[in-house]
Image (cartoon, rainbow, N blue to C red; front, side):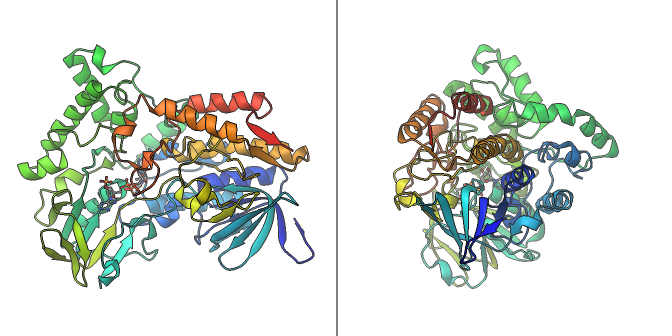
Length: 539
Ligand code: N01
């Protein structure tokens, strides 16, 4: 590391964010001999697992494949449950830190406020909100797809006198729900998990639902020593597989069409996936499910009948698992649930349908809905999601070579060559960026696979003494067109989801994740690389 005369630190690479992706960048680039640091807004490693410490926060990926695949890490690590909770994932990060000495190069409690490209020196000048400044040749934001929490603009939001927190900004010291009256707004993955926990601990729980979550069984279990031995024996093959399937898990869509099967065959197929649990009844279903409405209806009907059988009150059943699908199955992310549907049979759990009675305002005591009812609460949990994929990047004042702000450039929609770079913003390469596999990919898988693509580019450029890399506007546009063509024949555009940017009022609706799957993404990157990083201008 060197310093300029006015003592501004200079680095080869500044990484933003210390989750899986940032840790991978730091460790790899450092081991290749480059000067690299991470700036992290939180006070610990973990990224999303630092911020999302809400009650019930738990991984929806099987733990064994929710870790780095390096031999020197996985061989000595065991999660205690098949789907570990946030605190155990944090323990994993602490373990990684002990093994790889990551924290030595992390500046914690440091939120990046701005980044300006200095064309004269081909460097980024990055400033933290505390005024600290660094200069770096490459800027690698590793912000995750969910780093910008979204709270809807509700009238008198600040009037509420109780505790009110977004799930992704939950107090680090926790919040005891025992005996409390709890409101949960939102029924995505976060809302489902908080609700399960609150139903057990709180006096009363009221769930404010706009769209039902087509949640599927987690089938959680504590892992026995025998399980751990089997996992260890199988892990190398599972790690290998996760790089070669659509979503970075260790299973893929069933290579048969639901439409080609008899009722018995189809039902038998669904039942097997249902019993196996996890995302299999989503990312392992018949391959036409996310493309064909009729095939999708079959999956929805199976799901609906399974769920309704668990809910005693028919009116509640109709709201949680409607006769007609609220949207095609699987084009909004289904949660993994443990007892989510069962808790609505408890006397202390209530459901408010926001399509009938939207929230009007907050009051000092609680929440008023459009029918005039005021419900009193001690705790309100906003489980209302994120300005996903782009929100973390556009929240920072990132100014490109001609001073344009990234948020202005993307105001009418993102374009990003290979999902890692955008024209006018040289030497900035983002992991989990827009139109990369991002939210469609198991995090650690992409941290390694997409992460290695970026490590390789940065390493080659630094070694070759190249000063500047920038995607071309044509390449950005071609990639955006490619993504649009891939998503068009799918059912994804038929739901208002964060996958499409449709959860944020006014945001451009487009596929924010790469809908071609990880293997095709890898092919596209390999093609570009084989052609001297085609689509990039290198100086
Ligand atoms: O957010 P979401 P999330 N009024 O956007 C509702 C990952 N994740 O934090 O569906 C009322 O899914 C909104 O309603 P609707 C995972 O990838 C993973 O739950 O838009 N309600 C919806 O119900 C996930 O997909 C894990 O009609 C409003 C909810 O808020 C992603 O993060 C755990 C509203 C938002 O759901 C995001 O999940 C948690 C309004 N104005 C998260 N605005 C695990 O792996 C929004 N809503 C376990």
